[in-house]
Structures are given as C-alpha cells and as structure tokens.
Length: 163
Length: 211
View (tube, each protein chain N blue to C red):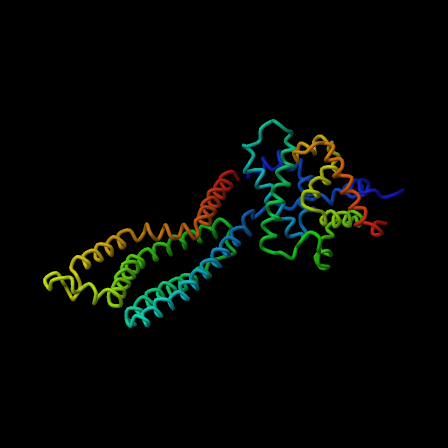
C-alpha cells in the first residue's frame, strides 16, 4: 500500500475506523490488528468502490464488516471473550481513552451485540436514520426503534458509573 | 447537566489524542506467523494420525497371521512420520525476526521442499502398500480358494501370473502417478491453506512493489 493511498484515502477517515475498531476490541494489541486489517482491506477492495455511496460510507461499511469477520474468527478460536463478559484484567486494559466517561461508554458499547454496536456508532457519528437504514438494509422506522432500545440498554449499563 | 451518551461521545473525542491511529507497519507480521503456526499444528495432527493408524495394519496382520507384511507396512508408515518430524525440526529454524515477506518466502520454500521429499517417498510407499496389502489378502483369504482353479503353468511363486501382472501394473501406475495422488491428498487436507499462502505472497509482493 503506497503512503499516498493511505494519506489520501484512509487517513481522513481514520477517526471513524478507530472508533469502530475500538468498539470491537478489548485490548490495544487487538485494536492495532483490527485497524491494520481494515486499512489493508480498504486497499484491497478499493477497485470495488462504485460511486453509489460516499467514500466515507463505504469505508464505514467495510470497517464494520472487517471487524465482524475478525470477531467471528476470534470467537471461533477463543470462546471466553463473549461480548457480555469481560474479565477484569481486560476491562482494565480496554481503558484506552484518557476520558474516563468515554472509556466507560466504550465498555458499555462492547457489551452490546455486534450489530447494535455498529448501529449505535453510526448514530453517535450523527448519521441520519435513513443512512443507517441503508447500511443495514432496514427501514428508518426500525432503526429508530432499535436505537431507542440500544440507548436504554446503554443507560442501564452506565447507570451510576458516569459522573 | 445530565451526561447523555451523545455528550460523552462528543466530549471524549474533542481530545484528538483519542483518535491517534496506530502505525501501519509490518502489516503481515502476525498474519504470516499465525499462518505458519496453524500449518505446523495441522501437520503435527496429521503425523500423529498416521502414527496411530500404523496400529491398524499391524493388528490385521496379526489376525491374518501375516505379521511380517504388517510390520513392513507399519515401518513404511512410520518412516513417513519420521521424515515429517525431521522436516518440522528444520521448520523451527526459520528466522522469525526476518521481515514477514522473507519469513513467508522461507516457509514456502520449506513447503515445496517437503512436498518434493514426500513425493519421492510416496513413489515407493504407494506401490509398497498395494503390493503388501494384496499379498496379505492373498495369503489370508484367497490363496487356498483360488490356486486350485489354475494350472501349474499359470502360476508364478504360487500365485496366478495374471494376478501378479495386474498388481505389477497397479504398482507401476501408483509410482508414476505418485505425485498427482499425493498432491490430490495434500489439497484435500491443506488446499485452503495453500491458496491462502499463494494469495498472501502475491499480495505482499504487490504491496512491496507499491512502496
């Protein structure tokens, strides 16, 4: 991958890639692996990009798909990293953000199902229901209901933890 | 003010340090090591399976009272295990501190070498297994029943010449096509890994050329 490609096509979207990868990983090592794999997949699949959507939307979709695939592979190999159970030492390691509240929010997001994580990340990135619905092949109404449920779940998970 | 998840998200990412991307380097480092480790694991399992399987012809030969034949097959199979084990030792010597590309190229060379080695061994082992198995079956089940249907002139070493000819042709064919049979066998077991390896090398070369 040329550094030009990285600088022009990936780096401007590195923020969203980082946010997605963080949501699907528990350790810094995994995060770096996922990030690299997403970048590599973007480079590999660049010729498949058709101007049907924005480059950023395409990058988002691809990043989520890569993370889901890697997570599935990992789950097949190591069962004890289920999303609803984080061993204390890993929970500790997952605090990759200096902002304590953001760390707690990420921990809560990691406890959601894989698809719910993807939906809430798009919502937090201020994508419209329409855009989210297109990504998941659903209706905007369904997405709205789902987001409401996810937010309720997150609130419960964060209850008493956020200052 | 209540901290909504939207506010936590926005505030958390105002600090740009939270969005520092990891350096993209050694892209294939882990991948290539994992790939080789997985291959070694599968290869060891395969060797163990062959080693355990040697018991089968041995037991059958004891039951059929042709124990020498059983020992020959057993020895041939154990030699396959021994050869594989020796090659694995050589694989452990691969330099993991090399670049991923060099590491995987070294592994590819090792793989080609072991496939060539096994192909040569199988040129003898496949025919040997056919000859010994036929002899074993002949001695145990067929000898007494079949010999009486043949004239003495049709027999060679107490066996029908036609049968011997068929086994000889079969053995020669197995030896000639040993490479194809072995490749077919390897593809069944490691086909997807071989394809991955090919793709990985092609991709690494493409990445190198774009640098």
